[in-house]
Image 1 (spheres, helix red, strand yellow):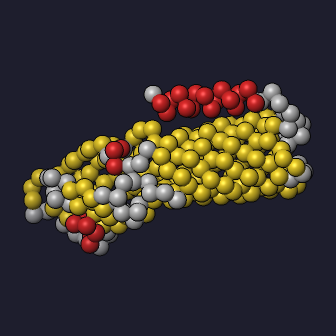
Image 2 (cartoon, rainbow, N blue to C red):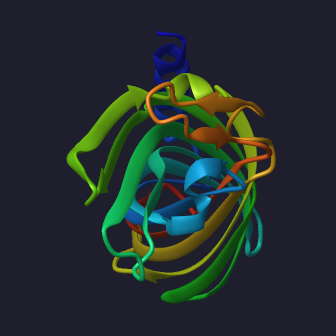
Image 3 (cartoon, rainbow, N blue to C red):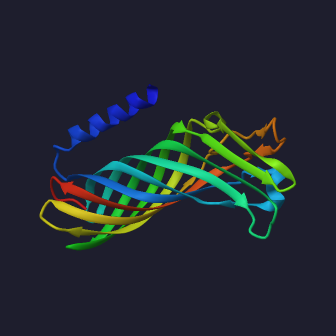
Length: 236
């Protein structure tokens, strides 16, 4: 409930600001690839690979022209991040796989520099506040040819992750002016959690005795986004 109130308040602020000059409001949607660094499952490390997970994101942004080609941009984005592991390809007769996603509201606070006229290149850089809002359902599968039955397991691991993290954000992109007030844009973005994404603790699966370690684990996320912006006045 608390997170919903925060998001609703921020959306209301954005809508009210849209009536001022030198502002633009926009929508964007995209796909992202995330990976959780520095977590491991000790009992499985010798025969699994940790891989990145494909997900999606969407959000709103507001941009305020400061001076010349510089502007300030704030955003509210929904983003799903995850981690996954699978048996190494050279193993025969046994295997394991697991996957989980956790959902965030991200609030980036960015400085933007752009250059050009009808076509513009731009760079964003800044920080991001990330609020954990849901997800966390972990699904696990394990098998061994010497054992007739495979093993399937699931649990919700949302409580393993911190409710708020701070990250850094950087992006490059292109925009195209299709009318006096409307721009289309495409962007590649990189983000990294500066604070730990999960609590520094170990979790032991009571069924398999696999030991999970989250020590200093942090999400790395890369995304490609497409959007549209409406300009209320002269804006970058």
